[in-house]
Length: 75
Image (cartoon, rainbow, N blue to C red; front, side, top):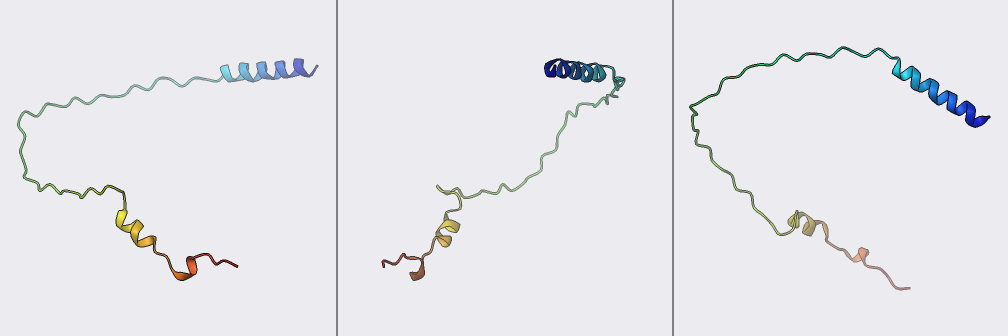
């Protein structure tokens, strides 16, 4: 009985989903662009970034300091 009710419920939901009104397709207006044949060159300075072997090596070194209180004590 439970299986029969579940099957009817699923079919009812499926039929209701198919019965929904579909929206009409929306046409998209296209824009025609012309091709530029001449380009102007602008001298820009290129910046060079330093490359380290490890990411954030200076930051990690600064944050990895230890103090006397960080060391474990033996009882």
